[in-house]
Each structure stands twice: as C-alpha cells, then as structure tokens.
Image 1 (cartoon, rainbow, N blue to C red):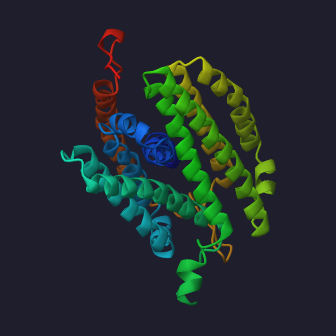
Image 2: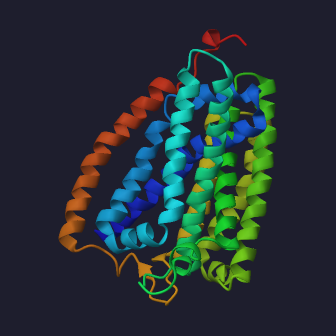
Image 3: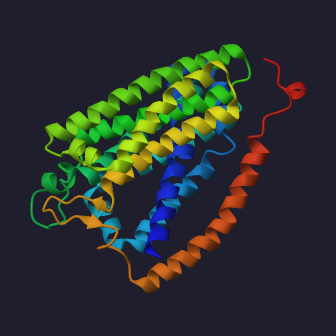
Length: 338
C-alpha cells in the first residue's frame, strides 16, 4: 500500500516537471525569443497552463496526508523559499492572464510581459532551492538556534542555488523542445531548435555544478551516485538520448520529439530518486526523514489510496479531453497564415 502511494507521488512530480515545467519554461524561453516568440508561446500555453498545477497540488496532498512529518518539516524550515514559490505562481498566472486578455495594447502590456517573464524564472529557481535544501542536510527541526540557523542557512548556500538554476534551465530546455513542435513554419522551428540546444548546454553545465557544489559543501553526492546502479543506468540512457533528440531537431516529428524529451526527463528524475530513496529530508542531526519512518498510519494510507484512485479516475480523462480539444494541431489546410 505504501509503495503504491510512493509510486503515485513520483508520477505526480514527474508530470508536474514535464507539464508545469514546460509552462514555466515557456516564460523563460520567451525572454530569449523576444517579441517574435510571444504570440506562439501565449497560444501554446494559454489553454492548459493553469491545469498543470493539479499535479503539484496532488503531490502536496499526498505528502500532507501520507507523510505529515515531512510536510511539517518542509513548511516550517523552508517557509521562506516556499513563500517565494507561491508568490511567483500567483504573479505569473495573474500577469499572463492580464497580458493575454487585455484588449488594449498600451504601456501596461510591457509591464505584464516583464513580470510574467521574471516570475517564470524566479519560481522554478526557488522550487529547485527547496528541493536542494531537502537534499543538502542542513535542516534542523530543533526549536533552539537563531533565525538564520533555522530558516536561512538550510537553503541559502551554493548547492541549493545550483539546484535551483539546474531546475530552471531544465524547464527552459523542456519548453524549447516542446515549442519546436508547436512552431508551424521552418524559421520558427529553427529558432526554437537553437534555443533548445542553448538550454541543453546550460542544463548540462548546471548539472555538473550541482555535483561540484555538493562536494564543496561536504555532501558526497558523487559517491551516492556511483553506489546506485539505477542512477548510473538512468544517466547513461539520458546521454544516449542526446543524439536522438538532436537528430529529431533536424527531422522534426512532434510526437517523437516530445516523447524523446519526456523519456530523457523521466530518466533524470528516476536517477535522482534512486540516489535519494528512501530519504525525503536530510536533517542536520542525522535523523533523516524517510518514506518509512514518517508514513501515516495504515488506516490513513488506505483512505488516501481510495481518494487517489477516485480522483485520478476523474482527473486523467479530464486532462486527456482538455489536451485533445485545445492542443490538437489543425489540418494542413486549416493552418493559420503568418
């Protein structure tokens, strides 16, 4: 029963990374694409961007109900970066809506765009910082210590910021690849192919920096990586998918390209989960919070599992219908003129 809950939690995080990450990444990519990309990006994410937060809500509900100690630890020790994430989500959604539906294009449109882009960058940075703090092992749940030691030090360090930048560039990479498939004309496709390659390089560089920052901070992530056969296999497959994706850049097939980037991202997350499992939060005192020592009573797990199955039976068909209605590409004869 617990394993099923953990599996659903992992799937929720993967779906949020792919779908929510593509939405956040679209705002990041727009910063590089400029005004030329604004119309395509708005058209691409406008119908579905809000719905993708369902997977984050699902993950939070699972942690809150199934692993209450973890939820309490994160929400207290990391309340500052989490608050920035929440503010970023609200601001991003608000300014995107104002920009998309504002009938008058005046100076305010420029401010809506700027704030949309800034919040699109800021939110994944602090999502990554929160994840990094859970991994880094500087969180203390003791009531003793200064405000800095309890609420700033656990996340304000090079490792957490490197994880934040890694997640940001990964989201940009996902979005840029997805936008290759959204683009209708070759010149647009080439623009997003170039941006995909740029964000891939930045993601790779930040991934290396994460491991370096971990070693400098005395968190031996490299050792943990090489101890995990699953992680080594996953990251080896990630590497093998690079030439596949680069080939598809020059022989565009929307379905294959999106499938390839999705598999690549899933492998990255599987490799990361394998390094961490079963630990959810590394504590400074060594008493780490795991899936097993923080799990709710079996009666609660049982009720949670029922709620999850009922909820997913409603959510998954709804999502399928949403994407089928709003994301289905028009026939060649129905394509809009440039």
